[in-house]
Amino acid sequence: MSRIEKVVVKPTYSPEYSVIIGEEVLEKVPEIITREVQQSPDKVVIFVQEPVNKLDLFTSLVENMRETYDTYVIDVPPGEEAKSLNYVLEYVRYLHNIQATRATLIIGVGGGALGDVVGFLSSIYLRGLPLVLVPTTLLSMVDSSIGGKNAINLFNIKNVLGTFYQPKLVIEDLRFLDTLPERELRSGLAEVVKYGVTINPTIVKIVETNFKKILSRDRDVLIDLVKLSVECKAWIVHLDEREEKDVRQVLNYGHTVGHGIEAAAKGALTHGECVMIGMLIESDLGIRLGYTDRSVWSKLLEISTNIGLPSKIPKDVDKNEILKKIEYDKKRVGTIIKLPIVHRLGEFEIVRIEVSKLISYLDNILDEYYEK
Ligand SMILES: NC(=O)c1ccc[n+]([C@@H]2O[C@H](COP(=O)([O-])OP(=O)(O)OC[C@H]3O[C@@H](n4cnc5c(N)ncnc54)[C@H](O)[C@@H]3O)[C@@H](O)[C@H]2O)c1
Image 1 (cartoon, rainbow, N blue to C red):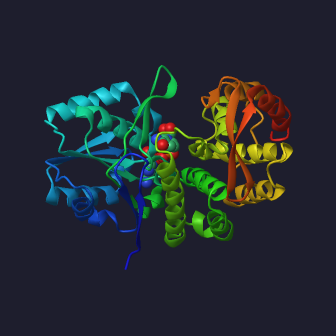
Image 2 (tube, rainbow, N blue to C red):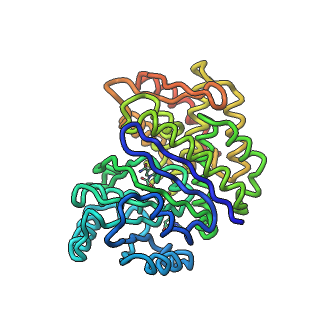
């Protein structure tokens, strides 16, 4: 019997929805949709990210859907390229041409970038079409497909246009992770570790004792980790769906410094790699400010080594650029920035810190985190 788990997301304002996690879930998609999505669709439009569109798993999903629904399929380019107004307009035209109505179900199959553009499109077309997300990367399974945030890029500004729009259902078939490039898998693990360090230390325990199994894509361990991570994200979305309270800031652990490194590295490092280095530096900062127990930093270092994520910044990434990016972080309000700090594993607090003080601390700390 294949294993299937379910987590129910109960956002602060929007209707609740299920996240179905397991293996061999795709075969059951028509039946899960009938059970979980109230309105019966007049047609189904599947947006699929390349190269996921070439996978047998995806082809059989489409065959399956065609047996039950009038089904259309659109290929979407990989990565950030798709997160643009040009593609949104192209997809709006397509939906208009096939006479999509408010009863047309949109399904997005792919990583976080695909989820962002399809989520945005679904939220604006006819003021909202029902949306089902089928994430295919570890990051999108544990993070971006839950919570209803979406965004596209414009004028070279990342995520500048977006809406909050919850899906009706999320279906996570872990077999998709079998084809995911190893670097993408490791990067997704950084977000998993973030949930463990900030909210649920059981995740840290599983990662540290099973890192070899995780990297060899052991289905059972990955299902455990994805489920526990989705529960963390669901808890935050329940407390603070629209980012109106401080608590959602915890999801940014490691991201203030991480985003600075990511921008300055200009594509040389993945998001997850930067978040891992960011968590190490922010926990170091927490120690110096008297908030964080040293064991948090040691655990992060041990895990980064075991799962093969970097703990140092490459030599050619400019320190001043990192600091400049952090200084103008979007979480800044006036001269203050809200920073999630971890006391001990699973115990966090959102602290307010003067940006100038943060920058002067980081100016010193960053030197210790450069590759020799
Ligand atoms: N909306 C949110 O809450 C939220 C949260 C975090 C990140 N994001 C966004 O998510 C994006 C990053 O997401 P991502 O890391 O999933 O990257 P991605 O969507 O760019 O996918 C990474 C790469 O993996 C490929 N891929 C996807 N699934 C695959 C599979 N099963 N097998 C082989 N290849 C596969 C993709 O084609 C792509 O080339 C960013 O745009 C970021 O802004 C959004």
